[in-house]
Image 1 (cartoon, one colour):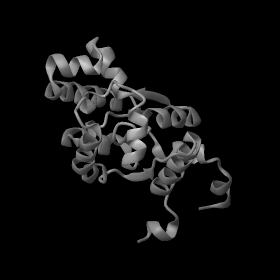
Image 2: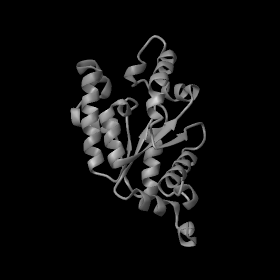
Image 3: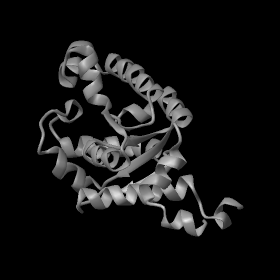
Length: 197
């Protein structure tokens, strides 16, 4: 890295490294994708989109209602279409629903048009956060914690395919945003010694 690049603000380096690609946040419900995504987009001067909000707007229904009326498979089909449309509009910061990255077609689109960031959080952190909001269709079970544990077991190996992993924990959102930016710059613009390996 040249002296000029070292002096360049991280936001500028990240925007240059992204080019036309989007930043796609993946992870379980409660990982902080929307909150971190909004702040990240603001720092980078990019548009922020929450896939769940976009799905609700396209369907004219809430996600719990889509699940109830049409079922999860239909919801996942719509989610895949909405994410494909949003990625074509990049560069932007996109927060995806917890199950979106499980679809191979969606992962492929993200690889083509974006850089994926897994916001990884421990079970206790996730449960503390999701208990604050009752609008999680997958957690409307007798034992939400057991359900979350089962989701982690199935989804973590798939989330691990993300380009970058950042730990989401109980620190300020701005600190997590800083860590996401640093991880992305390291991924997009590795030091020459690493790039040569």
